[in-house]
Length: 244
Image (cartoon, one colour):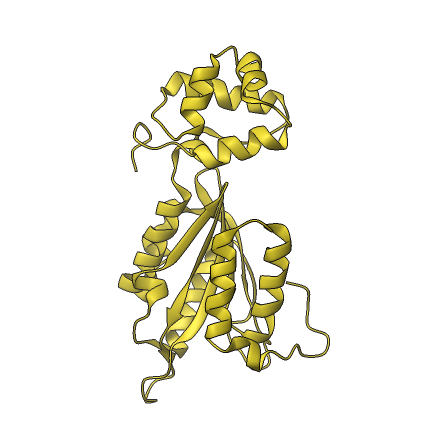
């Protein structure tokens, strides 16, 4: 999305609040008017000069934020990656390289003894290998996560969830499984990717997120969807399961 037509207002507002600043104090520190700060936090178009001033002011206050963080839409980035996942499958990382940090860290929930793609992947080459391995093992028969995901953004993080029909070759179409993702964007690129579809880790992670975002109505909706999927009925945390 063009930088002149979109601005990451939620991230700017979240950073200001983390610093304990009012809009008036932010305006004073940046030598801008309160009206400009309010305009930026409302997601309205701001000039390149203003964006640069905001970034420099936040840097002086110790916040490591780039202009790309403020001008690349994290939600649109995630939607583009999921679109490439659907259309290009094993080549989804190749088609999304400009969206992904070379140092991305990805985590796929599950027990490596029973789930061949579970584990932690570091760097874009291992992330690419994850998806090539996934599509060498499984067949995707569609699902709402890829085609019409539920998405919510919190600052520079994006939560996405939905259902996916995944099976091994020669097996009949399987019931849709519930999947939820947490993705962090930094410097305008995806730096962290968390994939939860193994039920024993999913419900524990939902509990963690509920504590982290106690007032998020969308998270309550996400939890209800997971519960309606029946995951909680199968939730049994295995001995020695790692922290999520």
